[in-house]
Length: 192
Image (cartoon, rainbow, N blue to C red; front, side, top):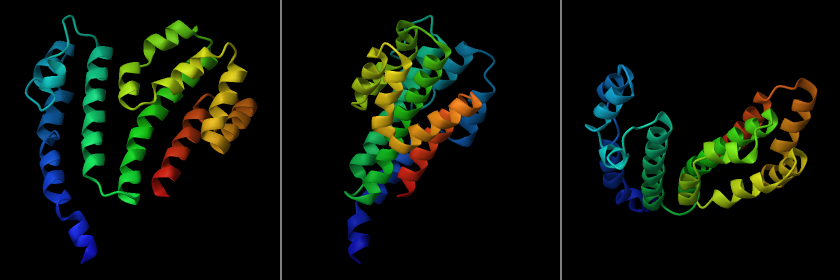
């Protein structure tokens, strides 16, 4: 009975938030968009219209993606606030950390490819990371002059997962091992 009381107020709020998600018909309509303008127009008819309305023409794919990403982050924040403290909240917070890890993976790939720091910075959505209070992590990563120091910094954050990724990369020279091991980090954190 204690657990029922604990979650009783959460259920109606969660169902309300769920009602704001896109329906399958809306997803299909978005998927059938012929171009970016059509996609933008169709998004105006969804709960994302407030995020899309902030964009100034001409709209780029990156701007649209970033606006939707911020909407996603705000949605997860709402769910986190609804969740009871403890394991339920920690579980949902891993979805926020996953967003940060996606940017770390992107930065790692670009560092390996040898892109200059300014190019990398331009491809990272620091505004979203600021919402997550994680912008300093990527800014610090990109301050390192050489890749070895940058990766050493990431080992301090992701521990054995990043170490194993680096070991495997040195053998295979396949960048995707970083994605694999950082995904494993998030999955194991989610399941614990």
